[in-house]
Structure formats: C-alpha cells, structure tokens
Amino acid sequence: MNPSEKPYRGRLAPSPTGYLHLGHARTFWTAQTRAQSAGGRLILRSEDHDRARCRPEFVQAMLEDLRWFGFAWTEGPDCGGPYGPYEQSARMNLYRAALEQLRATGFIYPCTCSRKDILAAIQAPHAGDDEEPLYPGTCRHRPIPAGPNLKAVWRFRVPAGRLISFRDVHAGPREYVAGRDFGDFVVWRQDDVPAYQLACVVDDAAMGITEVVRGADLLTSTARQILLYEALGHTPPQFYHDDLMLDETGQRLAKRHAALSLRTLRQTDHMPVEYHQLWTGC
Image 1 (cartoon, rainbow, N blue to C red):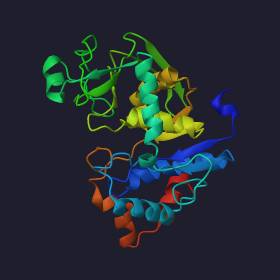
Image 2 (image 1 turned 135 degrees about the vertical axis):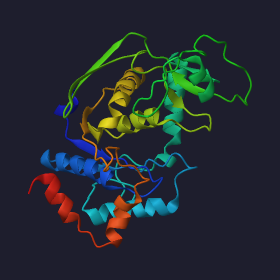
Image 3 (image 1 turned 90 degrees about the vertical axis):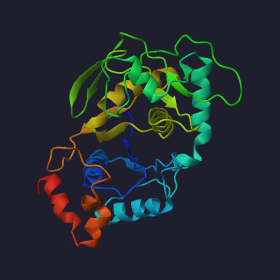
Image 4 (image 1 turned 30 degrees about the vertical axis):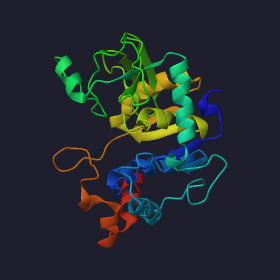
C-alpha cells in the first residue's frame, strides 16, 4: 500500500543534545500542521540513543519547550502509545536486530578506517548534509577481522552507479547517484550505537510513519535511507523537506545559536503566537 493511502502518521524527532531552537520549531510546526490538515496523528520520538551527548536536563527541556511553543502530540515518551517505547535509548534491541539482518544478507561490512584515513585517500572530500566524506571503499573487499574487540564501524555497501529518485512533497523530484553523491555510509558506530541513518529508518518503519517532515539539509540522507528501507524489506514513507531557517550570515540555525533557543525565548517573554502567525501567514 502507498504510504499516502494509509491514515496519516507524522512525527517530531528531536535529539536532546542541547536546547531546541527556532529552526527546529519551524520544521516541527510544518509537521504538526500537515498532520492536523490530514486528520492524522503526530508522534513525538526522543532520539536519545547517543547517551554520551544526551543529558537528562535537555530531555526535560525538550518536553517543556515544545509544549510552551504550542505543540501537541498523540503518542510519545510522556503519554505512551501502541508503538513504544518512544525513546531511542530503549529501542536498542530493534537496531541490533536490523544490524544483524543487514550483516546476514551482505549489505554491510566492517570498516577500520579513521576519518583521517578516509580524507587522505580521496582527492576531493565530499561534505554532504551530515558532513560524511565520500568513502573510497577501502575496506569493502578486506577479510573481516576476527576477535571480540574489533574497533570498527559498519558501513552499508551502496550499489555504485545506481540512480535513487524520489518526489519530495515540498522540494519536488530529486535524484542522487550512489557512489557519486554519497558513498558507503555508516550504519553502526565504533562506540556501539546505531548511526542516525539506521535508527531513523528502523523507527519510522516500526512506528508506521507515513510522512517524514524534516529540514532540507537531510535530502541526501533520504537517498541513503531509501536503500536501507529496501534492504530491510520496508516501504519508504513520503518525505517533506522543509526550508531551513538561516542566521544573519546565511548559515542554518544550529544548537550553538543559544539566543534563538526556545528556552531563551521563553525566558525573554517572547510569545509563540508571533511565530505561529508568521509561519501560517495569518
């Protein structure tokens, strides 16, 4: 069944590694508006699987700031739901099962290259949406090292030269060539946690998400994730890549922009309705 034929299920998927900012809120507002317009459900998922960077105070601030700004979700870590748990840190068994499936079917391989090794091996470093350099495939055909203390990441073996195309609801038709626009990408990190690409696909598929709304900086990630959906036997959802909010220098907002965090706006008596009206054209 096409995702558009199913009851609409959208999601907010913040990572509590810092305070949320206006750029997050802008994209999340689009997600909430689209869910409401479709008469669907909006799910909150805490992408906290990176325990080294996520902190309890950011988790609490995330919930408080989202509510203050006017967000309301129907499933999430604070209210439960049929697809829980809604914290990625509690879903590691699902990610490990997906990793094993990919390993057993030959879609991934261990890589012992450091970032320095990769940059030294390529003439034109490629910095995409997630700043992952275009991997030259050094470990693709190496024998798998033995031993329980293997220090390696696991990479997805992209089909070089394959055209990945999709129609983004907002950005329109998009095309990417595997091996040119992105290389063999990391699905499992050396510190034994899943990479964003794998955790995102596993959760969106398991939670029945029909449309993913996120920033335009993740368009290339969608091409990667379509390959993961196929390898794991799932149908990809629809995608809506929203325009990014930029600072005065033309750079996209990030968590380093503390002055534009929702927490700071709350403390300086800003009113969310100002942004609601701006973004909805009212």
